[in-house]
Image 1 (cartoon, rainbow, N blue to C red):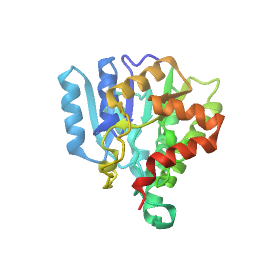
Image 2 (tube, one colour):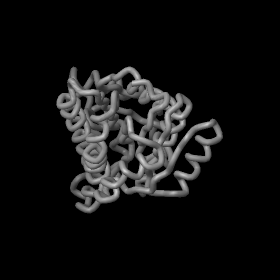
Image 3 (cartoon, rainbow, N blue to C red):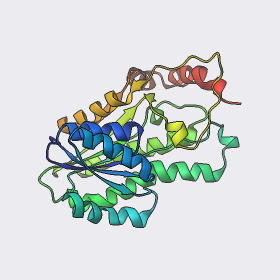
Image 4 (cartoon, one colour):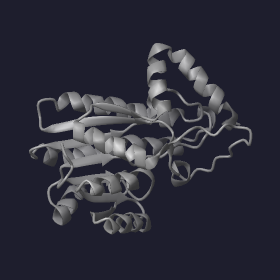
Length: 265
C-alpha cells in the first residue's frame, strides 16, 4: 500500500521513532493522526511536519485508556477522513532490574502500554480498516522479543506478546485488504529510557552499543508498509541476533548477558 494520500495513525508520535515516522509519512504525501500522551511533544512534531508541507492532526490519548482509544477512530475520521493504516509504535521499557526486584505495578504498566495498547488500537480501528480498498497495520515489537535482555525480562515478554499477536493477526487477515507487519528494532537512537520515566546509571567502562538513527528506522518501517512485508528487523544488532537466536539461542543469550550484566546491581 503506497502511503501517498492515505490517512495513517501513529502512536508515540510526540518524539523519538514516532516523530520520525510521522515526518517520513508526510514526506511521502500521507496525512497523519499523531497520537501521544503529551500535547507539547505533539505540538513540536506538528510544527516540524507543517514546515515540510505535511498535514498532521494531534490527539492526546493514553493508549492504555480503553474508552479514549475506542473513541479515537471517530475523532480521527472527523478531522482527516477514513483511516487507511495504523502504526503502533508507542512503548516503554521497565526499570532496569531483575525480576526479583521488579514491583508488580511496573510490570503491569509495561504490559499495559506495550501489549494491551496495540491490542486496543487494533480492536478500535480494524472494523474500519477492513472497509478500505487497501489498509495496513504495523506493530513495533523488539529485538528483545527473541533475544533475552537481563533486567528487561518483562519488557521482552511484552514485546514477545506483540510478536505473536501480530503474526496471528496477519494469519487471520490473509485474503483481506489489510496487510500486517511486525517490526523488530534493535538499539535505536531515541530517549526511550527517559520517556519511560527511567534513569539508567551506565558504568563508565561499559561500551556504548551501536545504535540505528531514528530517521533510518522510520524509513524502514514506512518502506515495509509500502512493500507489504510481514516482518522486518532494524539495525545490524537486531538482524544478527535474529539469526543467532534461531541458530543457537543459548549462545545468543550469553552474548547479551555479557554486554548488559554490568547494568544490573
